[in-house]
Image (tube, rainbow over all chains, first blue to last red):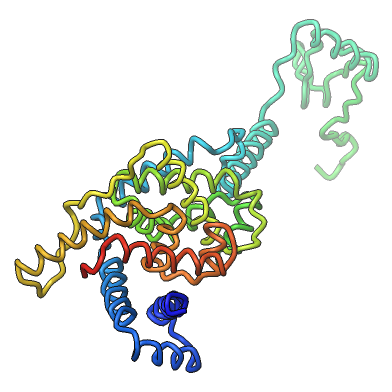
Length: 185
Length: 176
């Protein structure tokens, strides 16, 4: 009977050291302890022993330990990471910068294209163009010297305008009035 | 940002969220492991393996418990696996143990002798009892959380703690 009581008392003792007891169970244990020297010794030893266990902790390692720990753990974690396509590694800022650069390149390219002069025509293209212009406006008369203003003949007479080529719609730039009947001179 | 938020972020593809979880839990987790294995290098290996397992399995984490509890459970299982591979667990006195201040040389000698006896006795405890005692004393975990980490029920965790203290007391006799 005493054995069972001591077993129960030791359970209560450990409970009291560990978490504390409610008043009812605490009173029950106190009544037992007043009668049982073994359980009183048990409680004293258990308190000292658990105190010794709690005090027996290794000291925290130094900072070098923790930095090595983190570096090697990060390396191991990187090995575990799934392979990602290269474009997934681009950050949002990187993508934005890339898009801006692409826009600038396109804009500059378009501007250059607008300013670019047409390449010179080849001989064949030039001949085709002349033929087309001749078809629309008629052929240009060959080697017709254009004379503007009054013409002086070899005998010294002056005519107001030179004879115009037949196909040139030339308007004389001035007309000389016939002054032969001006008597007042 | 809570751990649960970070877990959700990670699942949505934000790998940096896991880095934040490592920042948050790596030191306390490694210290818990160190208290159990008593070897800094082994503690580092186990802690890193724990995070690697968590990284690989986080998508399957149902969030039935907290991330911390889940992480500690992985760590405990890794300690168990490691102990099976490399028995016995090194429990020797590490040189970097800090001596308690305000102790005379004689008291320190006596304390260390008792500490060694205590460690030897703890090594002889059944695994679950020893881990329950360590989680309760070192990590101040309640029995519900211990049950989640080690598996089993809250009542079983309580029983394991009681058995661990009682057996330690028997092994150490009346020595303080």
